[in-house]
Image 1 (tube, rainbow, N blue to C red):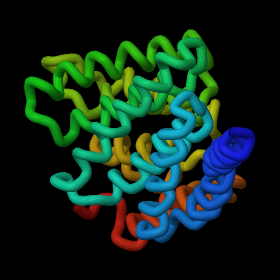
Image 2: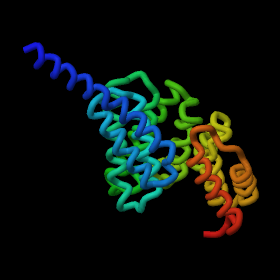
Image 3: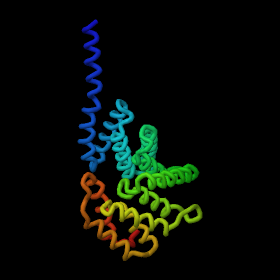
Image 4: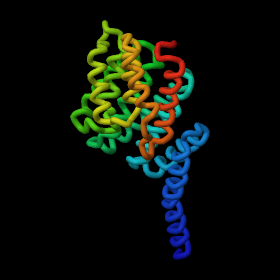
Length: 243
């Protein structure tokens, strides 16, 4: 009987060690996420960790980040499952951590991203939910993820047709606020540059693109910054007015 209890205890201890071992592996894969194949392995590791520790906020947020990273670089038809999983992960994290801004942010991001590939009736509902979550995030922590709430709200206002709430003036206001809160988070600048380009202000757009192309990278966000800087350089070479 004692032997059986010790054996059971040993098995329990080893099972509890699995998330710790996986965490190190997941982090190593995460740091190499510039390679999308490795990023996919990181998502698998974080998914597995959450089967052991479903309320692990850090792992949930890393998984959300990776799902956006992979989904945003996939074809639309292949991106949808990543965004749906992102929403599910963020919702679970929000239930476990209702006062943390992270799940609110990623839930809104997932809703906004899914709206770009979902059927129109679902998309309109998703946009409404995303906007509500970003307004909530502004009340919780307007600086979260380098002005994330303003960045997403700006995107919503710039992409919606005017007859269902699109407003370029509001989009510009939110993008500028995002830049103030995240001056080196270059996606803020790229979105504003895109808005200026579509409004015919190419000189302003080029000024922002030059800032992005020549700017520093954020520690821990090197793959994202490099991607955004490459996008800026591409448009500067082609000419910002090129389609």
